[in-house]
Image (tube, rainbow, N blue to C red; front, side, top):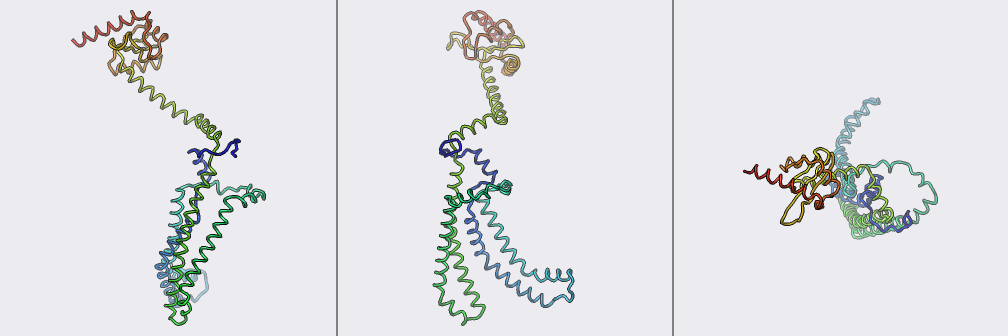
Length: 354
């Protein structure tokens, strides 16, 4: 049941997802990250161990050759720094692999998301009743089952590898130390790769489960969706953007309407009414745009840009503005006055064209 007394049947809105991400609530599988890190380490480890072993030999030689005679801190520090330099490339190779793959795996799952809310103390977690309910929750049961499955699968893989190579392992005392180390390394690497692949498969299922849980936790009731939509509609920035779009659309419509007009009758400053008359389609002139004060100024401006005739006639402009809406035909009682204006415009246009 939802907080508002309804079932959470609705998918999360974009705002709810954004808020959850700000709180650090994301769908992420730590198993997937760990499995990828292990695979990367097993790939890099042969080169890293080779570099590391060579560095250890050089470090031992350097240590024996340059043991400090004194026991003061500067001499000891210089000795340690000099002796540790040969093993640094191998250590850097291992650490950089863990860092790059670990960060890359997390970024691949959730992207870049910095949230300090997850670092803040949550005293509700100290409540024994809440802890008990979490212990028996669906997530806890799934995690327990996942851990048991991992332990069983990894154990079987290790047992299988050891059983397959048991004869070779029993004969390690008959070969040279270098060969024994190579055999043990090969067995461990094979075992590690198999464990990592199995872990990757489990991690894929775990990530799918985390996504399902994430979506389930973000679900909303119908009432929550309605309330959120109302909050968005009341937000000042949303209102501002909507008003900007409305004004832009209105200006575009006004511009198109005035362009189609035959004449604009003005007050001349307070009112402006644009008329269009097509005798083949309409029985009377039609009001295609009208406005007062600022809007009247915009109509006059658009008319001037489109070279539409402006005819000052205050009584007629006021009457048309008060009696007509955009799209209305001119009232019968104003036919004569409008006809005189249109006749004047047509005569003027004929003179200009001659």
